[in-house]
Length: 216
Ligand code: AMP
Figure 1: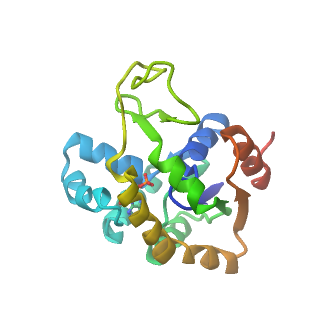
Figure 2: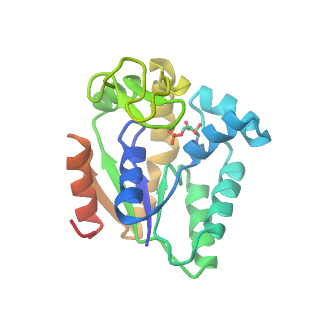
Figure 3: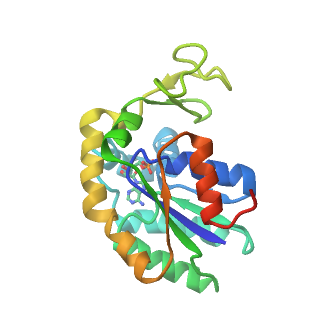
């Protein structure tokens, strides 16, 4: 089963994809996570991607398609895969179709997590991430027990450079222009499942799992 999770920045794509991985054994493929790791590791890809990421722009299609293509080909053929933040452009969507077809597979659903803009901006700017283990927090909705420290591993929390208000706005514009057209693209292929992204993590999870027909 191959599933794409779409939605504006801050819709909770990463959180929901991680839950699908934990609860149903999906392989979670997120170019954003892979690129942040590449930046941390100081690789050539990380160096190329950093300026785009810091300004809220998309990393060139060629780099992303290669990055994700390698992961798809390495995955076990019967593994469920959830794509989080990929595809984000029409050429990426075409490339995903070709890569899956080459493996004799297809896409089963493109979930569109719907969230009002103001709510998405609020979620983004309050988000904090653990530098050590990657766990997500929110200053208003999911504050850590000790300020600035991860509940799980004690690592320091930081704000992603691209979650500042100015960059978050730029990411929204990019989303509208480049990524939103994918709803139409997958709509004509009858793959879109709309999921209301409001409410807490568990509520959204329940809706998402129901939309995908996963056991509750
Ligand atoms: P995310 O963690 O999904 O919010 O992604 C963070 C940043 O990584 C984005 O703002 C882009 O700069 C880059 N990125 C992630 N996924 C893609 C993609 N599919 N295409 C191009 N750039 C991406």
